Image 1 (cartoon, helix red, strand yellow):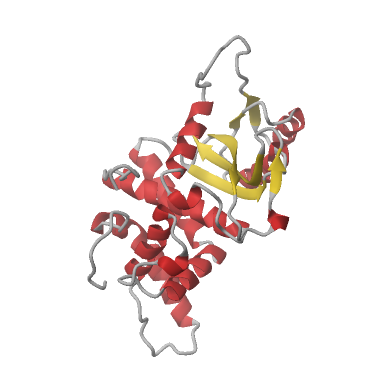
Image 2: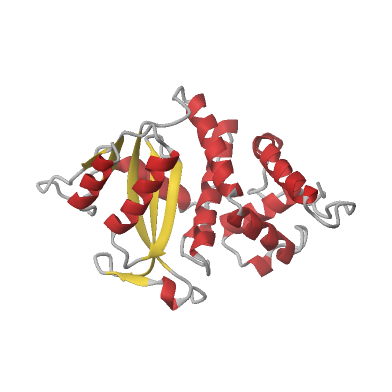
Length: 279
């Protein structure tokens, strides 16, 4: 690893040890199919990952990466490859299972929550990928997430903000049924329609709509639902997610996976996450 001044977002030795085997295996597989197999890699994987996390954490454009990281074009090419080949998804799954085991839970959850967040977009997001969330009066995109009862990410789908929660929820519940067959219970809020409840039942999943007490006034955390709000708060610690800056929805999803990877590596190693106030 190239020596440079460490940034607060850089991976510690303990955090790097958690994800290094996956990235090393990815590089080895790539090199096995490369034509220039005799040429050694020019940049260290830890440097590359540190640079990607730096972008996610600080929110800077790729071209503004500090010069003590590898060139921005190289870093972005790795990000795009890991995004397209599902490396971030695999890392998220590995760390989630480790985190659940560390909490005394089974590696695979039996219950989950679905929630959605509409977010404004930057000018580089294509108009065709945006929409209007009429209820929240936001022009942009919508992030629909599935989390376990600890708040750890199981799946994410980024769409135009105009896409109804139940439409995105149907895609996600089908995905969850295929990839996490142990799940038998899911909680959602009042934005999800009854037909989604019926669709989940066909898949053998009991979906419960947690509704707000109409007599309550002001902020009141809903049973089970507050876990999803906490996860969305974790994501907001990463400035790249304070607004959707990504041209591709898949890049937005990758940035969310990255934020959770950052969160879980710190969780597993007992390291604190610097906030915007003390970073």
